[in-house]
Image (cartoon, rainbow, N blue to C red; front, top):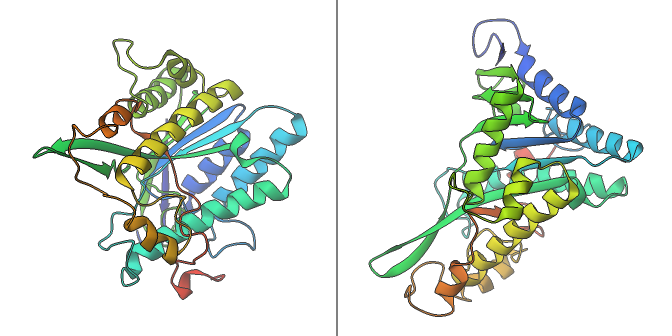
Length: 312
């Protein structure tokens, strides 16, 4: 184990320390088959591309370029909250802090996707971004809400893990925003059991062997193209069910404020008789809680505040 730190004189009264970012970039770029990341915030930076100064986005892009040169499969899985934990309503312009935080993350993810397209690859072959959503009943009606991701975990090839308090953004990684601590752990037993336990929970794989067998095999070895396809297939199916039944937000079906207004009027976001068919039958087809993260949500709008749009 190795203890890593992010801080500076401003945050901790010590010299600038960015060893968490260095370890995470090294983990990504030196990984052989896959990287699994589960974080509360992912706002990766790119050289001369975004307002972010961290290099997590650049590290992912470099690793994909290496995979292309070598002709080998490689994949990155990222699990994020569907919405930031900030007050506000994403359907209202007045929710500036919420929209800015969401906009920064969406912009960073879309930048990564666009950069992958520029180098001539299909982003889905190398990148899967997931969120988590659940549903329940109360007083005879069904409702849905996101499962908020507060983890800060990265696992590479099931033999290295980084666990602690740092998100993938400037505030956590550059040492000048927040003071963070992480532990780098080498060892297949811990790394694989941690990563598998998280994926099993997200895709409804029980310890008793319940759940889709193809998904269990994919979670056991997520590096293969077939595993990637199975994971994306089930997440896409879950996404469509939640969207069709609850008209959830955020969704890739909403690209603008005009789309958003039409979407909100298209059906109930919560509250319908649980015995209403075919809604109950569709919900029975869910496999766990994983859904595709809506990277194209409000893609025709810039949700960021002006101060978050340019280079610092």
